[in-house]
Length: 259
Ligand code: PGA
Image (cartoon, rainbow, N blue to C red; front, side, top):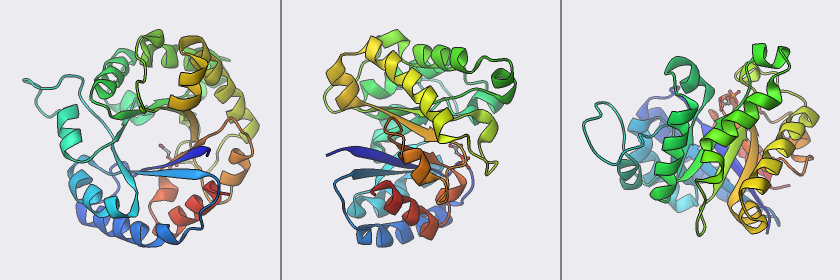
């Protein structure tokens, strides 16, 4: 059965009680979404402090939980950071790394992303790796070069491998469309997805790519444009910010995702 990912990135938009309320609403509505021959893996990524309550409320509805950040060491003098061990305790099966907002505001580098991905895989947490070009990079004709560099770095050129049932999810998010309401065209996104998929095929076996790797799109995904993205076979789901903050809208995305 083919799997698609629907991942909510709540960023720093909600208080803990708002996160809990939204999780409860989604958990109540999601089981009513008709099942099809497509399995939709739904992942909620709340702010760190809400991880505990969100995973408690999401579990029974078969919804997974992801963090928005992790540190690459298990323990030590790293004030303010959160270990993969903490994420495990909090019920996280996923973690976003390399989001453009962290690359921009917190100087998260390709090297940091690489170390975080390795730490997550070591602890059996599935990384959701964000890659994408800025407007300036795109206008300078550097889109593909930026993507190739970010993907190569994040996966240590194939040195970081998924094992067992681990999933590596790469989210192509053109930085300049995030939060604008104006996504790139599905054909444009699909071209980048093909580049990423070809890279994965060079790094891993056919079996690993099929079973353990997913490439999804993010950047102003909403109920109006999601279906067009999914018509491109190479797009295996979406990472959603703004449109994941209202239960009704998110459930509609889940319905579209499974059709
Ligand atoms: P957006 O955010 O859907 O609001 O554009 C996506 C993201 O930043 O992951």
